[in-house]
Length: 369
Image (cartoon, rainbow, N blue to C red; front, side, top):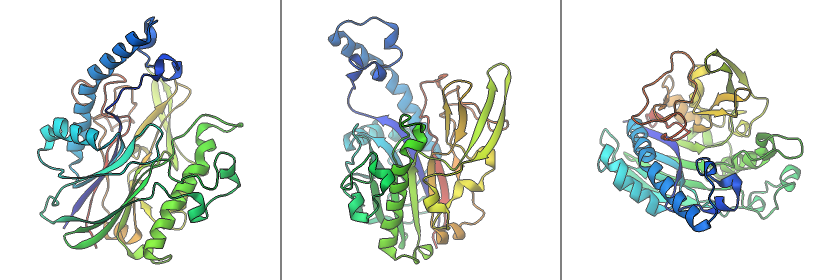
């Protein structure tokens, strides 16, 4: 019996328009910056036209990436609401996979933009095993005080009664062909702006570290500290941090070289330092683990893993030797691939946009113990 489990940040699957760019230039789309728009009413009309025109190609590619992942259970990030998810599933994904994902789950979380985590599930796995939801729980309301996780670093930007998860940790207890499986879907705090001499990653790391500690505590409270290694669970989602990266050195036309380096610290060390869970993407070659290309010009460009499937020790050991897949066909043409990794892009992919997402779907076929 096998289960295909995937995670994918689809980026801004929204049902509403954001008009704040008229007054806040930092939030204005670059194409509108090319034109002088003096009236807010005209700006809103242009923004609506721009978004609608671009969205169809984008969501076709998003659906193609999901279809290629061919998951039985799909963990999603950056979903506006259930209406947006249903509209996307009916209007786009259905055309790729048919009536595949009849079970849909989303709980409104804490993100100020209203983007949430969600789960799509088939009724059965591809080999006919029933997928049953036993319980679902949101941890969006959990505070630092609740789990006694507040510290001096967090006190610089947070209060003790603030919510830990900046989006949510959605917990699902499942039976897959009668076998228990627990799933934790997250979307950790994004890397913010530099603060007090720290770059955006370092300045926000205490928040992500607390989120990782909270996920671990939730699992340990569920199964018992010291007993989790025997259970079947997975932690999935966009964790907005990395333990390693591949620096892309060079310029277009002059060629590139790729240098792998480990990070001195990461919020995700909470999961890995003592073997609490395994990042199965580390089973791939060092230059072939990335799920996102980051760039701010030739002097700052690298490939890194932001999207994760962390497996419990029992589940990882039961699937020893298996490799996860990374679906990169929806990447824009500006993404720089190491030699030998190039893929055929989806039709109508652009240099920077349209694209399926800046993130790549990550999927793995698992046998449950």
